[in-house]
Image: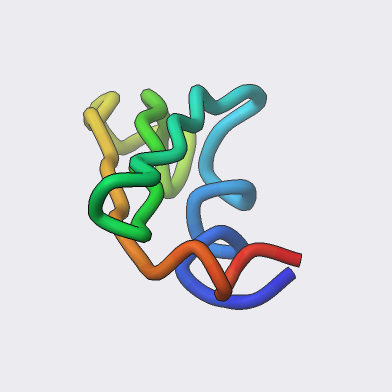
Length: 53
């Protein structure tokens, strides 16, 4: 997977993704942890639609 999806996938079990056709972008949201000892974080990414595999 290309970045930033790869980084989000490494920290979370599931992710919500919305395509924003009027802006030719997508938005992804997830909750994850970099490590079991770290706090949970709300993670978000926005990129161009053509970046999706």
